[in-house]
Length: 297
Image 1 (tube, rainbow, N blue to C red):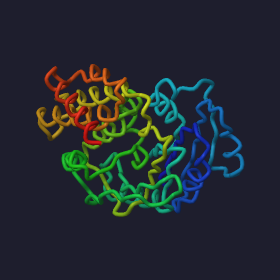
Image 2: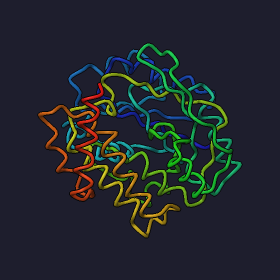
Image 3: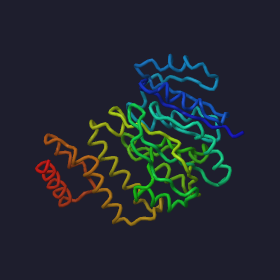
Image 4: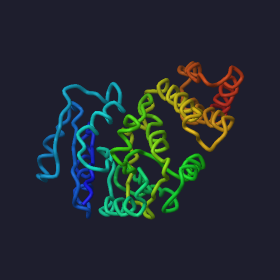
């Protein structure tokens, strides 16, 4: 059987037990789970030990790598993988029991693909359903996959992908941006040259909580810089995206405003200066939009 390595960088314990259990309940049995404790102040090891499963191995970083650079932590963790395929799990998301079996079946059906994607169910902190992702065709070309993301039809969150380890290593691991914002987009795009195989069911549960990285409102400048760097990655001719530079620039302005600027309090509106791919008139327009949102609240 093809071995699959679930790599779980761990920092929080709140949902860790259920995250690990969902991996151990996989119907596909040839898996390993490597839990990498990122020098957490919380007791990760006791939760791992309580499960008593020989497929789990526990590692603890001597220093907190993810606090400095989250993607560096991801790339550090995958060095422990022994499987042909890698899943980068999270300490709060979960997998349906047939996730791994379904993905391996797709990998066997489409042996040239380096990436298998599960459709996503978003859940809240209580595990209650919030919404479902779109189901893509079982096989999509790279261009189809990329367009589906830009059309908001394909949700990406790194944990819903199974990666061929050799291919991931060949691109140097996960692509790094500040706060890992956009790393879960650029990395799948970089591995999709042979297309993407897609599950036809929601087999991955993404948990939206107040403590989730994507909900962190304390890193506005870093997030704006990440949007800039991701846009520059999109525009790099070597990456050959099937969208125009004009579209990408407009998308960048949209993300600047909707992901960051509109949420700024007045005392932080100066962060507009970090929108470095926006012209002075474009920054002025965002400021006017910000004022309008405050007036109409």
